[in-house]
Each structure stands twice: as C-alpha cells, then as structure tokens.
Length: 365
Image 1 (cartoon, rainbow, N blue to C red):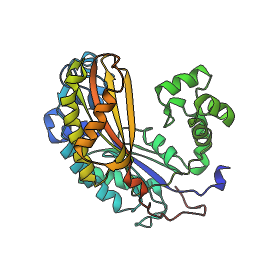
Image 2: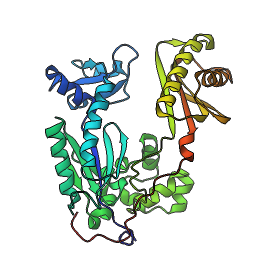
Image 3: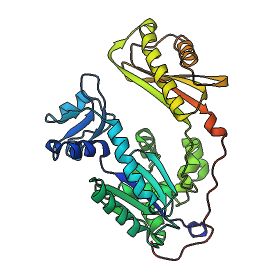
Image 4: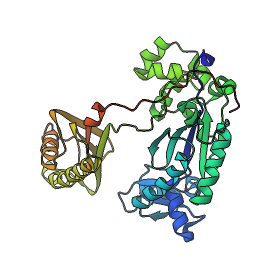
C-alpha cells in the first residue's frame, strides 16, 4: 500500500537546543555549562535547556525551582527573543537556497520539500548534510535533520541522532522503521496517550499496527485514524510554504497567586493589549476569544466565546475576556491567565496551490 503513494523527499530540520545554543554562542562564558533560558525566580518556567542541563533532567516547560533542584549548578539566562528571531531568519535564507517549499513550524524547526530542488540534487540526504554544514559555518550553530518520504517520518527521524546528526529513512525501510519504533517516539503521541497505549499493550509500532481502525477510533477518538495510517507510512500532509495562522495568544504567569477576579482585571487589560498588538502586527482579526486559566494546583481551564463578527480591538477583546472570567466561579487561586484569538479571517483566504508529485521517484534518497 505504501509504495502506491507518491514518494516525496522531505527534510525536517531541527536546531539543537536553539535558545540555549544562541545564548552560549553570544556569551562564550556559558559554553559547556548547564543553562536554562527563562525559569528564573520562584515562579519561572524553563523555555529551553542546554544539553549540559538536560543530562540532569532539566527540560522545557519545567518549573524553574524544580530545574534548580535537579541541577544545582544550573545558570538561568533571560530570553532574548528578538535575537532568536534574527538568527532564525538567517537560517531560513539558507533553506530557500534549496527550495521554496519551506514550512516553518517555529523559530527553530521547519519542513523542506526537496523532491524538486533548486540545486538539481537527487539526494535529499546530501542536501540535508549541506544545509546543516552551511548553518554551522554561516550562523555558528548545529542542527539535526530527518529525511524520509513524508513529514511524519522525517520529524520522527530528526530526533534520532541529536544533537548535530541526521537520519534518513529510505522508502524501503519505512515499514520496518515504524514497526520497531517505541510508541513514545510517534509524533502526536503525548505522555497521557502513551500511558493509555501501554495499558492496552501497545508499546511499539508493531503493536499499534495490530489494532484495527475501529479499535483505535473507539479508544482514541478522532486521533485513532491518524495512528492507524501513520504506522503504515501513510501521511498525506504536504509541505505548506505559507502556513495559515489559526490562532494568536498571549499569557502571563503571576509572581503570586491571585484569588479574586477583581485583582485579575488589571492583568487581563495588559494581556488583551498584547493580543490586540499582535493581531494588528499580523494584520488579522478573529471571532473566537478563549480565556485560559491555570490554577495554583496546575489544573487548566479554558472558556470560549465566538462573536458574530471579527475583532482586534483591545476593548472588545477585554470585555469578552471579562465576561468569560465572570462566567463561573473560580475553582482555586490562579497562577496564570491567557487570552487567545482563533477563528481568524486568515482562514477565509485562498490557500496557495502547490505542485503535486504524482510519480514515484526512482533516484536515491
């Protein structure tokens, strides 16, 4: 079934500990030392950790206090997002030397479709190696890459030989690769889902492959069909060079827990202003306002309202967020508030057409 599908040549490039690596590059005193970007203070959260810190179990999204316990010599560094954006743009310039089919996922990773590329190079593996070398020489950072027939496998493969490595999964190797893969390595299988799969005796791709699509749908809802197909090497998503933004958000973590809605209104004002600023900068507006509430016990709650018209004005965003805040009583004191806008008017714009590869490519990967 796999070989009946069009075979593309997809590269997933993932920068190695990007934020932390930029900080170490800009400040040589930090090189070789365990650092965490962000995470400072009693309430801080780690945005990124260097590989030296990761050896101690420090990772992104971890509370700074816990990170400091795991790694007593950990150095907390203030994030410099303007600098990360500047470096990211330089890296993307390199990507566009090879193909216009570049789909950035974030500042530090992107998909590239090099099936037909500007260099006329039939080997996606050699292109990935050349890109990684150029990033190192031109920017000063290391990157890892995964190369295969679709985005799913390429992304999984890019994590295989990190840091500063790459892995190619050739068309004839795809099935064996996926069957042997630990279920935790499947992109789209989070910690909670992995635990659920373990309870049902699903530990590897081979175990997953034994389950029918009906079984997976019954046990994993709308994700069931996705799992059924990707374990068979089937993933139709093309590299989208102009990915349409589907949401935009801003949030704040507070130095002290807030226990009254009255104390939260000033915070919501600042968050609404930031969301409005980002909407204006992106020249978009949205209909759905979502209020995100994280309680002191780290439980998360969201409340949403969809308006009959597009908005981007601070006052309307704030009024809607206030109504959502007062919608029901808070469960606990609050450590974080966030506002996001979705159902954006970008979704009504026509997506650019992309040339489809309708023949199998015989040359080497």
